[in-house]
Length: 124
View (cartoon, rainbow, N blue to C red):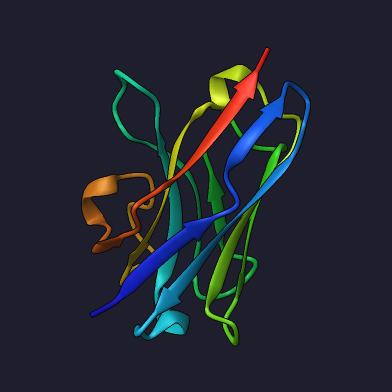
C-alpha cells in the first residue's frame, strides 16, 4: 500500500522560509503527478502546487506563485515544496498527494493517495 510521509513543517516568522518534503513509499512514484494542498482551521482544503512527471510541468495557486517552488526527485521518490517569503496566511496543515493523470490538478477530489500532513505556522 502506498504511503506518503510529509516532513519539514514548523514555526517561522513572517518573511521566513521552510522546505517541506514528501517521501513516497511502496509506490510507482515516477509515474504519478504529485501535489501539495493545505488546510487552515475552519477552511476548506486548497490547492498549493503540483508537478507532473517532468520537472517543467508545474502548476501553482495564484497565492503562492513566485514564492513557492515544487520539485521532485524520481530516484529518491521525494517531492519537495520550497516556501519563501512566508506570510501568516500560509499557516495551515500541508498535505502531499498523488494522482495518476496530469489533469485537473487543482481539484483535491482527483488525487488518489494522501499523506497525514505537516503543520506550518507563520507568526506575524
